[in-house]
Picture 1 (cartoon, rainbow, N blue to C red):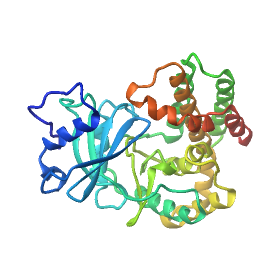
Picture 2 (cartoon, rainbow, N blue to C red):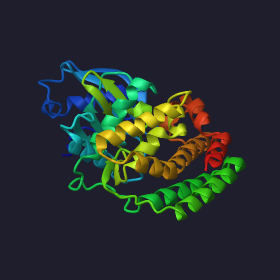
Picture 3 (tube, rainbow, N blue to C red):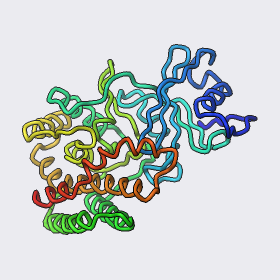
Length: 344
C-alpha cells in the first residue's frame, strides 16, 4: 500500500511544484496506471482548509496530488484512514479512485495522497440537484461497512452532544472568542440537552456516513454525482449526513442562500423513498440532531477566525484561510446561534 521515494534528499530551496515533479519522476508509472512520466504537467493548486491540492496530468490521465498539512479528523494516521476509505469505496460510483499514499515524510514534510481528479463543477443548492444528493447518500448508507475498520459513534445522539460540547470548550480557549457566541452556544446546547432527555427515538450506528456533507464536497461529473474529501467518515446513524446537508450553516459555507422548506421536505422524502426508511421518523431524528450539527459548523467557523486573528493558522494554509474569511464570517455569526436557539 505505502511506497516511499527512496534515495532522494528532501529539497529545501525549490518550490513545491518542482518538488512534486521530482517526486513523481521517482515513483513507478505503474502506480498511477500510466506508461511513463514524460508528459507530466502540474496545473492549478487549490488549497483546502487542511491540505494543498495540486491538479496534475500524466499520459492523458488526471490526478489530485494532495499534501496533507493538518489533521481534520484528529487521527494521527489521517491519510492512511482516507486511503483505506477510498479503497473501500472503489467500484461503488461514490468517490474518486485512489492511487498512492506516502506517509513516510522522506521527501515532503507532510503526508501525500494521490487520487483521481474528478472533472465537473461543484454542487449547487438547486431544486433539480436535490434528488441526486438523496440518491448518493442512500447508496452510501446502504453499503455493508462492517469489514471497513471505520470509526464508529456507538451512541450517536450522546456522541453528537459531547462533540459539540467539546467544540464550545475548544472555542472558549481562544483569546479572541466572542462572549456573545459562547453564551448563546451554551444556552442552545442546554436546550438541546433538554430535548434529548425527552426523546425516546433510537439512533443506531448502522450506516457509513461521510460527515462533511457540504456542497463543495460534491462534484457533478459526466458519470454522475460524486463526493470528495473522505477525511473523516464514520459509522453512525444516517441522520448525521442528512442533518449536515440540511444544516443552514453548512449550506451558508458554500452559498449565500439556503434551502427553503419545500426543498428540505423534498430531500427527506426522496431519501426515505430510496432507503426504505420512514419519512416521519427521519424528520423527527433530523429535528433533534440538526441543531447540534449546525452549532458545530458555527463554532468551527468561529474558531477558524480566532486562529487567524491569533496567528495560530498553519503557515502553509494561511493564504487559503485568509481567502475564506468572508465564508467563516458568514457562518460564524452570533445571530446564527440565536436563530438556532429560537428554533428549539
